[in-house]
Length: 461
Image 1 (cartoon, rainbow, N blue to C red):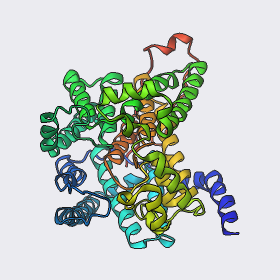
Image 2: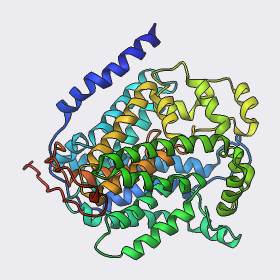
Image 3: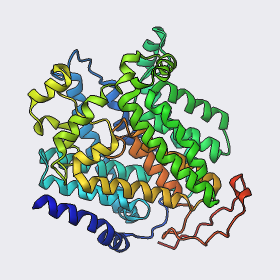
Image 4: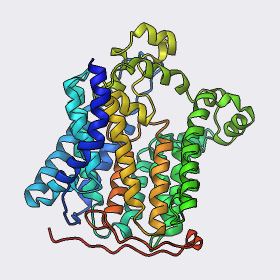
């Protein structure tokens, strides 16, 4: 009976009550233009500090060593310091408190609120509460970094600083890999390819005023060093994104069809790349990886079904982040060991953005995942041609890369940081309600480079 109620209630909430809640909660507030140094230091340290405390493990049952314990302590301290920083900013300027409720930031903020409520039915309530608070604090701090009137001019600078901070944190790993002849994935990181790709897309579709070649070279180097087979394949997002960005109706529909096809093909290849031996061998050569590792999606074809089986009856999820991190509480450890092998019993993520949303808050999480992504895309489609191409490429890249990573729906990470930047980039170019004058019907020639910029129209706040 409860499941039947959820099946009916959750879709009704998203169709009827969510638009009402958004209208009531959305605020109009001018860009913040805060100083960058302190929030950048806090956020980048939080994002990349754990990489310095990497602990080698010989199997999945290994006890975490002191280095990782120290990492956890520092993580808690950084979360508290960032919270104090935000509290101080709010005391000086009430706009800081209102920012997360401005569009298009609001849907992700509402999702965090629902994540917090999921502690009521979480399998580990304390963990869910902490991860929800951590997500809000660093999402809020990310907004403070990017929410500025000059974000169009400085966006590439900020993304470059983030990329350089990551490269600095993994320099010893890079040097060791290069010494062994490993270039691609020299310091593999499933989350950074999206940030590097975003910088590359920005240089191509909305070129910065300066350092274009330098930034593109940095984006390329970071992408290769962090890259994986999945992130490389996700670059196909640029193709359908360019079609979707056209004002021509036929090309838009082709772009949408291409995007859906890319997602379906991506999932198929992740689950059964072995059925395409020529492609498998080519990717293994290019990516410098064993064909056996790529053939089963680095284990995803095994543990995705395990996650689905463990969570299939929990339509409201098992608690934000807890459903991913503590899957052992949802399925007997013996069954996990039989399916995955003894060494992988303690997996801590489904490595899929949408499965993470499902495991955490069930149908609610999937609903918010769609709302956040579609809101970002729909608002981005109101920009000029270069802006539309940039936003569409980033959203589709996030979706495709998120098929193999927690993406933006498990806990805070650099993908959430990049999402906040993308939302700020959109926000400062549009009126607060996102409404712009209708564009006249354009001829097919619109599919090239001519377009009209959207004027800014911010009220005094």
